[in-house]
Image (cartoon, rainbow, N blue to C red; front, side, top):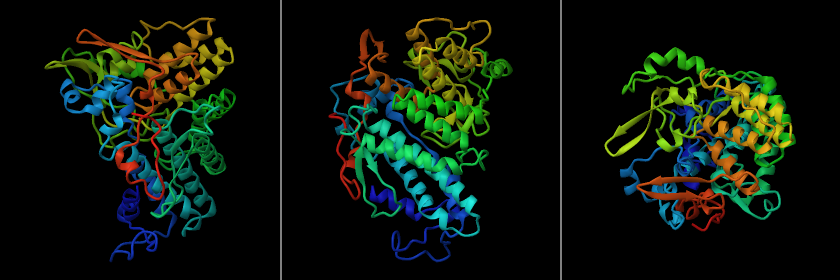
Length: 467
């Protein structure tokens, strides 16, 4: 942990180098600039390295990302997650440092630096200082939410005060204490960061990478949903939608591009509409990559879980066979908001909260508002039911498909499994053999990499799962 903090402490976006010599380096390199102005620190929010969120183990476990047979043979950790091997010792297989852990904590270090220094910078008004400070608080809280919902058990009120989460580090100093706090302590910290940030978040942010007020409300709603606090989740969902309630029309996108999309055996790409300028964005954050390109392929079984006529599926992937592998191959190229916050998530949080409160018709009205922009007219029918379970399962299905290859389906599945009323499990047949992932499996919590537990910085790290 200390090594990654030192690395972050030595590099600044746009070629700047930190000046806190006592904390980081003995000298500022000749010709380097030490940060003094607000713009120097705000550069960290513009540095897209700090926006990345890599949750590869979760996408493998959900089978939301296709893994070739050759890779499964050569990579035992990938095979353990993808094939749901409960006998595999994933701790032993995580020998080297892992991108999920170090990428996320690298971002936390950068955001800590902003929070520690933004309010004392030069060449800025207090309002400008507060805005950058608040945006860093939201970004830090988001990173802690991601690692907590990857490496620790999901939030359960009755056990949150006794179960451990992840290291809580609130300073960019490489000598800062690293304490592995309880799940309750971590959620209290995240909620407090959001609360302190909200009054200073701008309604319109500088770029798509900077959280705005809508992002603050949306993230509040996400956190409260994960805590099963549907009243507060609904409250902040409504506030977020008051800031931005736009929906991208995937049906129109498909119609505009179907001349390319529908060509048999052609994998020519259309430009991804899921980038910086998508109208649904509250804040944009990359997934594992920050480079232009195709998104990962998905398994045939995963594609089958989309609704018939789903324009998102038809616009994003096309079935392909290469050697022994058949899968759905990406037909978009560009950027993808896999780690940020968008309006659709908030619509679907609102729908779930309404359904939980037995307001089924209101919940389905929200759900169908989203579906009309996703399902082709020839296949579209309103979902109509008075049954709570049926309504919730329709909401869950839409949300899982909407956020495939992000942390959202993984976090939702863990929440549902802990609750027990609407559990989520998976099953598939490969080579005539049936494989299952039960809702009670230990595999829903990812182990820390050995690189972190053996080099935990100024603290200790206890594994939250046995294997």
